[in-house]
Length: 393
Image (cartoon, rainbow, N blue to C red):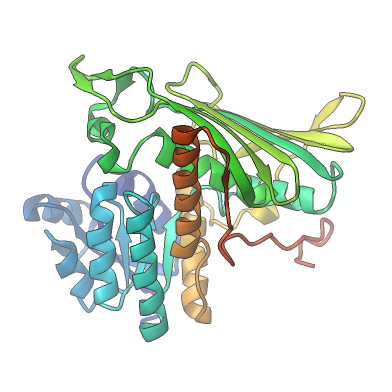
């Protein structure tokens, strides 16, 4: 493989997530060079390539994945198109990065993970999924604080979050396709999926869940036009569960932004204190990259705990917010390729979280608490760090 990993991005059209987050991240990473883009039309792909100074433009994921100057295929497209893009990459023996959710449901995600596992065994393919908190400096810092016993044994974890831009009475035109369950892109799969991944990353896996899902808006207005369209996906979630440690977990996500103007708030209560976590910049969606962490003792006083710089692995110049997280995951992919090991989080981790979402749906439909069996290797507790030397211990 060449010194730089050559990246082909499927879905790099103007106003896309790839343009907003992936390309700004890759522009500052010496390990990579973007060599190809693909969209659904040759003319738009060529326009995007010319604008970015990229050599190759395609109207199909198959052509992009088969090109000899592409080593890593990025699936930054609507969820229903993930399977085709990932399948093309695996068939061509290429490494693959898929945005979350991996598939439209657990069955599709499982099939993609099985195919990726076979490709990894046969051709050394590295696969990764874009869960936004796994390489967040704040998440890693809080995980270490808990592992070191900063607030004593954890007794409860709670999170309240806004569902905006999903789940409310209005929806952006660009997301109007998300109002059907088959789209796989709604408040449960996207907002709850990312939130639960963050909570498990810092506090460990869930063992069981009970939940209520509600759809308060059977018709929603397209924000730009006012057009009313049918809505068949949930916009409210209330979840209770138990962590492997025995601590209780609660998660509440409400449609729109009014319920949680700051984006999200996490409270972790331990026997000897409490951590509260909010976005450092409440106006910067989604808030996973930069956290404000505060610690309080039994006397109720709270002080800020700035996230140490050693948790930040992205180079200078990467914009704060989602691009910074994505840059960190790209660096994880580069290291995994170099070291010949799986990347984390990989498709197996995605299946674990898809399984949790499926259990939440069952719990909401039946009213019966659902047990969870964490997949082996789906969650890795971060190594404790020496807080004076900044080295793993």
